[in-house]
Image 1 (cartoon, rainbow, N blue to C red):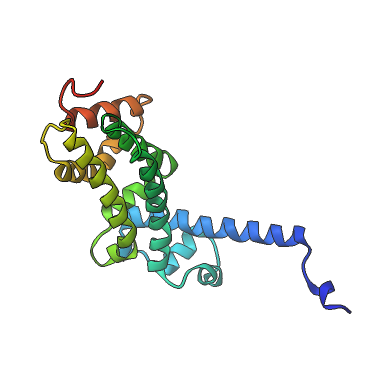
Image 2 (spheres, one colour):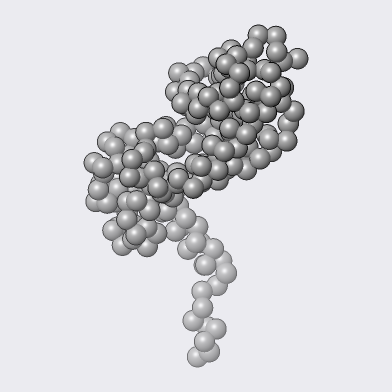
Length: 201
């Protein structure tokens, strides 16, 4: 019997990979739900395994521990956000605030629970995504300092404005989450909070 005969066919390999990916995504989805409802410290691996309806061996095939699960939930949102902010950063100052609002709206649309979890995770676990959070924050500050230089900010301070966005954006999206006008209302609220009246074309 040749060694190639023991190898799975490409179709079989694709099915296995697809099944494993679904299992991993189910673990992440259930972990996110549990971390939000119970708090990270109150969720065990056993609880995750039970909620995701997978074997412990399946959990450990993908993740070494709960911290790795949390990092795998959080890091992609910042990676995506960094890419979006890089595109927004090319806009003129008058368009930056709307661009930043669009970034938050797109991230919220893709994964609201992950954004909720980001706002509730700190302390010892912040290190799991601190490097990406720092890069995203730096992009946000740079953008708002350009808006400041253009004389568009109510408070005339790009750094403070970036801090306000970081603290207010997700709770505001939470307020408007069920409103079909969420995009318009979010833009209006954020601009009204930070941009001088009549400052934008």
